[in-house]
Image (tube, rainbow, N blue to C red; front, side, top):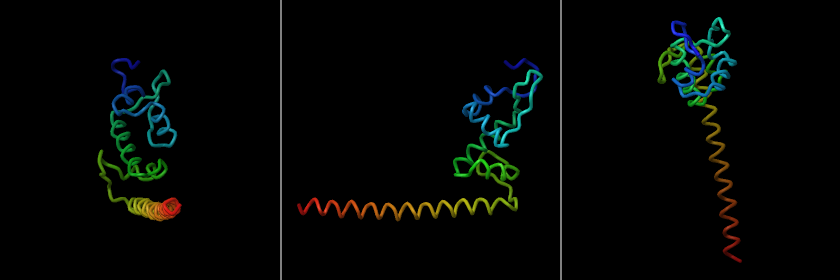
Length: 129
């Protein structure tokens, strides 16, 4: 447990404050997204600002960005919402991700159309028999 007067919060408290499992927080750390300090006992100690960082990470993951992309963009992130500073690399990464999503959506629409054609053709065969 954290001793009163120590700086930072332990991983369990950060998990409670953010609703993110401790193993996910450790993963974010391994990806360079969180950089906790270490207490004298060797435990991870997170700053109060890390609550905001975790919220930002979760929102960017929800936008379909990878942890690698998030690490690259992290210096541009300012608030809890889609608040981003206009860093030079920002728009390229976001547009590339959006273009990839558009291509994936187009592929899914084409795939759905082909599958639907198969179903309709099979149903016509069943109706004839």
